[in-house]
Amino acid sequence: MLTVFQRVGRGHAAKVAAAAGCCSLIALAIVAAPFHQANALSRNKERAQSTRVVTRQPESPLLLLVSIRKQRIRAFDVSGQVNASRISSGMRGFDTPTGVFSILEKKTYHESNIYEGAPMPFMQRLTWSGIALHAGVVPGYRASHGCIRFAGEPAKSLFGITNVGARVIVTQDELDPIAFDHPKLFRPLPAETLAPADLRTSGEPTKVASNDKTAGGGSGIPEYLGVSTALAEAARNPDSFAQPDRPRSRAEAERMAAEKIATLKAALKAAEDAKIEASEAAKRAVAEAEALAPQIANAKKTLDPLRAAVTAADRKLNDAMSAYARFMAGGLPPSPPGKSGTKVVRVTSAADREGMLEDAILDFRIEADAARAELARQEAQFASLQPAASAAEAAREKAIAHVREAVAHLRSVQTELIDAKKQAEKRNKPVSVFISLKTQRIYVRQGFEPLLEAPITVNDPGHRLGTHVFTAMRYDERNKDQFEWRLVSAHLPASTSDDADNGSRKKKKKVADKLLPHSDDTSFDMASDALDAITVPPDILDTLARLARPGASLIISDKELSASENGLGTEFVVLTR
Image (cartoon, rainbow, N blue to C red):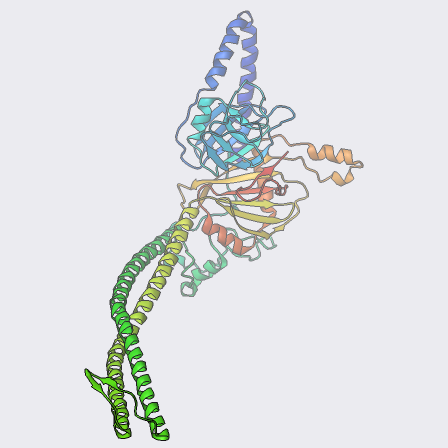
């Protein structure tokens, strides 16, 4: 947190610098009047030099600050300015909106779908409604249709150091990020998991992350988001803290994520091996079943003619028995001469006829019995193949089912591993929090994906507080369990506590539109008031502690989110004009 001396000292230095600048300009005007042409050339040279790109590699996430009045964009990391360039913003009637944005999309080359395919090299989208940073003509004044244009080389240079999700703040005045700290700014999980001995307290009650009454009375918000009430209890009784799925430190979170991915990779390897083994077993089962198929088919082909032969023999036997029965019943005369083998048989008497019929019955019975015996033998052989065929078919179906199960398990593990990798990648994306003082709600997104939305408590400060952006630039070098924060106040409204006393709507609007002049002290005080006014539920604070990484940001605003600009695929767009 900045000390009073630091804050006053910075303001005093600014005033001295401003005074020195004014004096220098007056002196220059006095002594250099005869050389106005040379000065004009010098100014042109200075303007040309201002388009030259002086860039260093960022040491932290970037803050891009655009000044409409100065027609300039500057990129800051934790150590200061990284990049600066002249711009051309929207002309009158196509004014570039002021507010809080983020880079939603980057394309080396893009064509406008609004202005008949107008080229937009090094495009960095700020809204899905058509506002972007891109290369274009920079005439030295506002000339675009709402976009922020750069000269080619500065646009390429900035494009090379930004990432999707980088914060962009557009204001009228030119602002600098302010080093800032406050007890209600969320903090990350501790860098390392504390040992039980380190968690023991000195006997004094644990004050962090508790809702105990403060010394001044009233209920306070948990002071450090990285320490929940449960963790404070664990400090007094470490054995009671048993939540293996919830990391207690960043190191433990990384270890758990790495172990999960390693476990899933091992499971994937086992699933792949199981699928290969099941496939090989299925191939063997299918081959065995297919090898028995020709034998079964041949056996079936053999049985069909044997069944036909038995049927024919039975028919002959029945015919012979019927003929014998008719002969015996009616005393039929002897039949005409016939053939028996190669001999001609002539029936000369009833006795001969009867004998012949009896011989036919006997012959046909022997033939039928022989056909039936052959059929029985072949059916027995076919029956001996059936169990093996049935077993082979059952084994084939079971093996194929195992393959299906192995493939399903493999796909399940693959999906889990993909999800785990996505979660690991998502953990590296900064979380963004928006708190609307107007609607008294908190919104949390990560990687443009909504995570949660919930009501919060807002204490009425008696005046409007503006729009403030807090960005966690990196872990504090002196205390790795904290962030180094930077504050940019995107909007500072004048106090409107006396609005109710204004008699006319016109006066109220005039007061509401009046803005406080930007200064570090004013931003510091208004941002502190905004943080002091909010109370966030402890479970959300615990969630934020687990998600917090460098690049995380908190936006607190009197405004509410615009429904037209904050749909899917965006972080937060807060319009201040």
